[in-house]
Length: 343
Image (cartoon, rainbow, N blue to C red; front, top):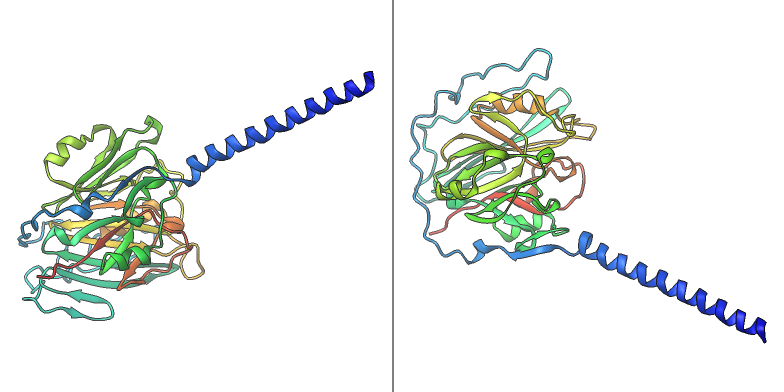
């Protein structure tokens, strides 16, 4: 009888321990689900309901002194680095836009509000793609979230699908903001997030304004309220800055400073930008170090240039097809794209 009671008590103890293990496992699964799988802080893309009037057209004039004109050569890259062929900046006096007709080719798009030329360059063991972009109105320069939602977590979508949904002419991946819970996120004039990260994780911030200009800030000194009042239209918190006020940066405190696929947004003058994608981790192209990427962007004539997310995220699209050669199938949380205005 005593043995039976002892056995029953032992069985009860085992059942209790097993139940606690199962419940603990379920709790951990729920926590993991919300932390790693289910996006948090979900907000619909506010710009979808934006019925604001079209922004004023940009007046194109003489290019800045530090923007090379057509046919001139930029400062050559250092002799100890890759040598690049700069992309000539189209002559500003030429007809940048049409009177309304749309002219398309396999590598260009020209209309009343947009002028885009896509080119691919191969230098030694590096292949890079340049989309030279003029927008007459900043309503053509937009960003978009995957699934039309701002969300921290696994909110991603194939870049081709986002591009198609937005009628994008060209597109490039953004800063993959959803992978972080901190940093500044301004998209199409809306402030979605301004959470300062730890000092050790401070990032450069790139801002595009509704007058067609672009600036790069140190996150410590950035004031989102002030810049929104100044017309901040888009802002990314990633980087690093590659070219600041015409000067190529040379010091990078990043673990990603080695050879990698790259995505970059460059700025020449109001309304004149470029998207650049560097193929990497492939036989035809090994990618670029950040210091060489900065040299490339300077030699293209950029006054400002900013590094977006790269690696397997790096992707460039033209006419709803890949224009670059992505090294992986990773989906993206956001894109930067150019669309047209149809009157």
